[in-house]
Length: 562
Ligand code: COA
Image (cartoon, rainbow, N blue to C red; front, side, top):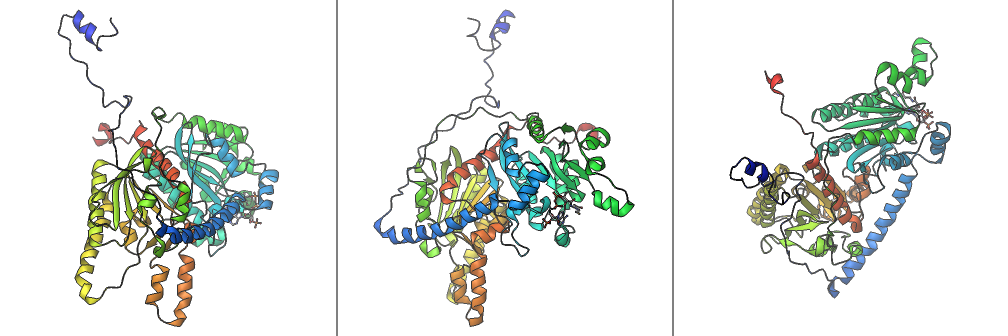
């Protein structure tokens, strides 16, 4: 029949010509794709009796860490406290930030970034650093969100708030994710102005980033659902499309109290920079929403106009690991001395507990190999002892291999304390230094996505080769047991002999906890070991989305070149 003939056959036959074979459309983004089949070896994840005491000690430590994690989580959910919540909802008639996210996002399955940022800072505890950031789906599209929490000092920007917003923008840029701002902020927290205003990575950088993100076609939408005062006013004005909510949304460079002080005029916020003024007179905003719920509906509609073409939901079932993720609590090392073979961890993260090891017999203190996590092919690089000369060379080789094949890299970091070398070991030590330098170079220059999970120690130079924060991984998470410091606390004891130095060692212990790190935004959050696979799977999906954006950066137009 006519339907059975290859495309174009009938027309060609009618013209009396020999039909050409149909052109295969393998390159089309619409064509169904097929993965190459794999049968990677299954790792043995069973515990031996010899592991028992280490497992128990780690599990005990993990329980202590979990308790701290839950305490902080509770504090985070409490925002700026009971009084501030009442002020926000009853006096100001605004919706709480987490309820706002419920209205904005498709579901609650979002990835929150650094929820513990802001805790334990020299200037106090700033819950969630005064703004919630993360990645969630809007009409099926993963978007970064940056949402001020006005229950924390009127949503004002502390230095840590600025840092958190900049990191969220960086995540948006690095992974080409649209960015949605829910703005409700009194601008800079004035008592700390010198740490917010003047420097390169201070407040102004947020606006600079907005301009650059627009230029490289990363869509940005702002919803004004509160105050946008002074610097805060530039967030919506630099976004590409803006919605404002009537009676609660305002945008101005100086609020009514300043107007009164400067000119003696009494003016109400609505007249000075409210929704009617900005949507009818100044044109600063593009959409007027009568109530908050309408604002979220409008924002969601704007997102659906972005030029993305997402693939059908993948319904193929992924193979779960053969071993329980709960057991990771007993594998998360209390200290380096309580580390077990890292394969026991890897086989609790990968699909079917499978791993195709690379150079299994060489440089055995680093594990490298290919696996799948929730169906995504990845290259795994995991510390399994000292980063020796051989291990570093192997690491460089494997990282370059993944880069060449465009396979995302997962680093499982647990650095060993640096041994003190004698003079006779000088040559070995310098060779190792050189090889570690090569690995750092390979990691820094690899353009494939990278995700780092610190499962134990993050210390010294080894942490750079294992894609620490300075090496720009797309995401970096810590397990609650993780330790982050230039020297491992136990190892520093040996170097510092003076009694008075014990103060410094105690400080080092305190400053190296995962929660201390996360409070300062040296990472993207503390995650529980048993959630690692889920978080990695989500990150891999998020990173992949950029392949489906149709409106890509264009080369300069011919006209412009002329
Ligand atoms: N710097 C430091 N603290 C600020 C602040 C700022 N820019 N803006 C507000 N705060 C504090 C208030 O002092 C108050 O602190 P308290 O709870 O300890 O009393 C808290 O934030 C909440 O402010 P409040 O005015 O009670 O809440 P509100 O919901 O009625 O109003 C604002 C919130 C942001 C609209 C209002 O406080 C305001 O207009 N602030 C000034 C904004 C400004 O001029 N910024 C310029 C920055 S360059």
